Image (cartoon, rainbow over all chains, first blue to last red; front, side, top):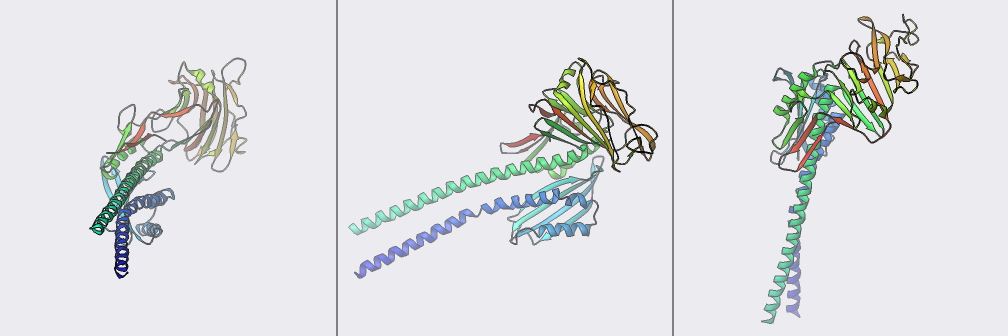
Length: 140
Length: 301
């Protein structure tokens, strides 16, 4: 009777260890889905910035105004996402490009070991200014 | 002895179950990763294509929509700057600052793979009707069927041409009561008999909401018809001449033309065809492909 009780206790203990091991393995395996959502999120935000005319307006705005707008868009990201966006404006002439402005907006500090980068280009209607925006994101 | 055997069997079974579970998990995970990576690569190719194409659309200022049996060209004339210089710079900018090692961006055109060779002609197929300009300065815009193929124009049952002046006013009566001449300074033949017919609805408007609609809509396609509309801008009085039917000058095709001498205008050309079985063919294409994946996008829109 007493030996049977110990056997049962032993079996329950073994089963618990097995379940904990399986759960740990499963959780480990499911982490890559995060890497899927980061570029999707980054692309969505870049598309919103592009289609709502934020990039085009930068040509008429001061650096401070542009930075404020970009920061407000970054704030729409989920709280557990850190990101920064850097917009560089180049003037093109002949076959050379001169960097004329750099605007940066930050929301937290992205983890350099797990970050994702998305890019966009845009241009001024006069045909001589080109913009490159680069967003770096990671989970915070 | 028997108990030891039972324990060994139980341990083996538990191990097998654990191994099978891990294998299923690994396979599922692998499939998920492949699916995710394919979706991400497709998204990137699509985004890159659309991003590069947006820049070209901004430069060329031409948008085309096809809906059922209708093709509409939204155009702005003339070009504000040298489009070819811009395209050359744009191409350089893309390769220096935008293109990543895992994507390949190419321009495919009849005159080579440089974006500055972008063709200024767009075809409506299978009718071989061309919409385009003589150069990217966009001083002259044409819509015509090539010589000996004029009958193809009959596929177009109606052309709606709307010209909007963006920085000039219509300066003729009745649109503008103070205008010195009539808006109808036309030379045309109405359609009659068995002559080839061209159906054209011609309307003009300006930024102060004056408008003028040409009274006729059916013309002899074999005759060099013209309509001259007086406008006023900072340079004074000028005339905008629209040719339709048999075109004059070097281009002796039948069709429609707006030649240089006009101010800044937005031109909407809406073509109603007798079939929805047609397509817009761009002679130049933009191709974006993901290196290492069988994913690419080739189109021009």
